[in-house]
Image 1 (spheres, rainbow, N blue to C red):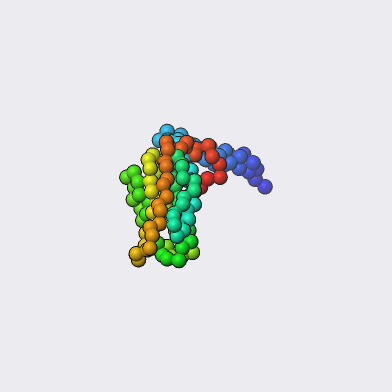
Image 2 (image 1 turned 90 degrees about the vertical axis):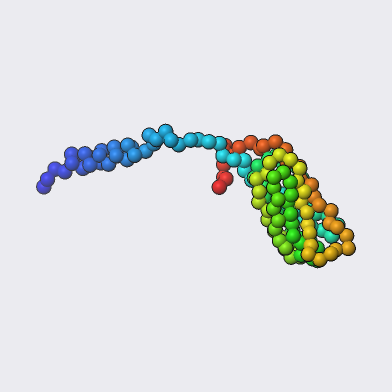
Length: 142
């Protein structure tokens, strides 16, 4: 029987050494801060007005989920500082999502209809303040 102990030990050391040599060592990786975590807002279209809650957030990624609680289909428009986004038409009792990265400023969220309505639906106002903190130290984020 051959004594294979030193040969096996040498093979294990060589494999471990090559694995360690392949880790790290590159200084090209930057540890830049992550962007702020998205803030989720909710909105409701009613016969008299559109509401968004909360209506004050910090600048950064925003997701607005809007439910149409009227009997007509409506398009939804987010309009403000260097941003204009339209979704729809959103059918009655359905919902739509607007996802944007917003800068500091004032925005309006409007509901429009292809048909003339007896009265205008009052738009919601969204105030966006200074940039939110980065999400580098927040866990359980994608």
